[in-house]
Amino acid sequence: MDNAATSFPKPQSVLGAMTSYATQLGASAGRGAYAEAVETGRLISQCRERLNRLFNGENPDHFIFTLNCSDALNLAIKGLVFGSASPGIAIPGPFHAICTHVDHNSILRPLNALADAGVIEQTRVRVDPQSGLVDPDDVRRAIRRGTKLIAVTHASNVTGTLQPLADIGKIAREHDIPLLVDAAQSAGHVPIDLRAEHIDLLAAPGHKGLLGPLGTGFLYIRPGIEKKVAPLREGGTGSVSENDRQPDFMPDRFEPGSHNAIGIAGLSEGVQWVLDRGAEELFEHDRDLVRTFIDGVSTIEGLTYFGPQGVRNRVGVFSVRVAGFEPLELARALEEDFGILTRPGLHCAPLIHQAIGTAESGGTTRLSFGPFLSKQDVKYATDALAEIASRRAAKGAIEVPQRV
Ligand SMILES: Cc1ncc(COP(=O)(O)O)c(C=O)c1O
Image 1 (cartoon, rainbow, N blue to C red):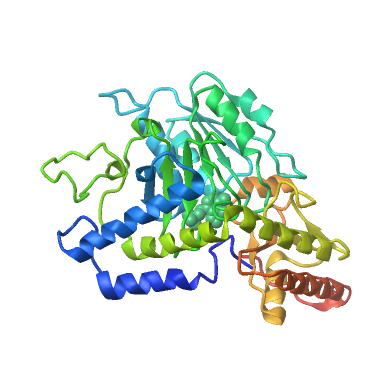
Image 2: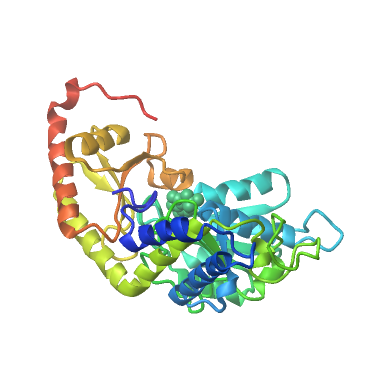
């Protein structure tokens, strides 16, 4: 139950595609005229086409492969900031960015690094401490002259809160400000429509809900927006080799160097698995698990779960505290006594832990679901939590382990 970190298991088709690439192709796309290199290029294009279909994008070539979601967010944020510099001037002009208290360090840290260097100014929009929801009107109020980016985390990796993306997207589009969405916890779990939700930049990992391997991720850049984004890396693309400047066409503008072909071959099958099952159906399955979890924990004395207190506005990511247990201690009991794998701590998202009041006490223990878990699995977890919670009366004598 740590699918929010990376999904496990992966579909058989993902493993099959990776094995088949490794044993039968083993080539670098665009780096040879032989059949294996051409076929590798076709596999990579096919993955872009599948992503474009899943998210209703405008052009498959606008899906840029990255190392993970953090890498995609860095490209979007720093690319926009450095892309806003006038020709011949290295330092960008006034650049104001908006993010939220629910964001992961993969948004907070790049923005803070730029703010600390004096390159940007930023406003962090608060969230409701109970639900973890951002009020779109707060986003609207934070807009000022020079706002050139709104970044928002679609689904929280701490509280599971699902933000009203279409409303925030509408505001961003009305003001002609690029909207960057961190879909680390929603891609593959929740239907996302790039056009209907007015998303300009979508960053996602390939290794979570899209069921690909670690080392995969992407940034979708809406056609037209790529002109505002500076490449952060230059290098060989296998195209226009006579030119010693980075090409400006997509996707080569942002993809120097050999691709992670084995990873993308696997990711492509993960995306196809999601397409076959259907994003709506996967979301419904997630809701069933959420309902089962909430039913199971609602009568456990001493257990608190954070974020929306019902199935609305959330995904199957639950942060819990059990009175008398440190987050790590609870995670250890779940693992050692029940074989349930969870993640204790602050989950790389310090501001949302401050908002919900768990930052000072070591965070929470997080259970996160995926498509291969059943309602029975979730019931097993809630029964385990009930049993652990019932031990706390006798717990005074137990030594509490050190926090990590
Ligand atoms: C909300 C959120 N954003 C970004 C990331 C970073 O993803 P990655 O590990 O693929 O860089 C995570 C990872 O857990 C996340 O939960």
